[in-house]
Image (cartoon, rainbow, N blue to C red; front, side, top):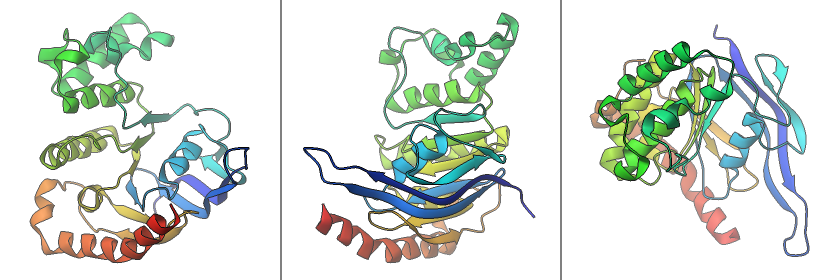
Length: 264
């Protein structure tokens, strides 16, 4: 039996009322287990609390009720050692080269220069960025800048990688290709991955399991097992099983998306 890596129990998030905003019940209650080494994808209608869920797991946002544990230890108040986070926004530093962007976090640690250089060189090769090591972000495409952000996270060797729509700004073809890259990195790292996405195709291609969330307050409606093998890639989009998965996702999300729009 697989080992539980991250566990959520009774997690809710309520944003209290302010002078300009009524109380918002954003999330939960949610019970969820992320298994060690799996690729878990979360989909749901806009505003259902997907990003809030990721932030709570990352320690960037506190639950109103409930608890989160990583490897049996409570997560609260700060990003725990062992978790890496990549957001949708391009977080590369425009004044640094690709090499210096990737090395940035490592240089805040006690690692010696030789180890940092080894890790950065490996990440450059892994992400296909070796020829652009001395380039600046402005000289790169959007997809390549996201590779830099992924590489900066991977060199920290996190045991859990949380991804919030990292390819949201890319076109569909590039998203599929970046999905292949992401699967390769997941296999290489052995990390537990949780990805937030609006793309049902992306979810159907990448996931071991897909958590489908309701309209706000977001709850888990259903968890779908894709039954793909570890060596899957973008070629699965041509299979009948892929069509079955994405059809089921849309069946679950259609009414929830209409509810979300009506309540917006």
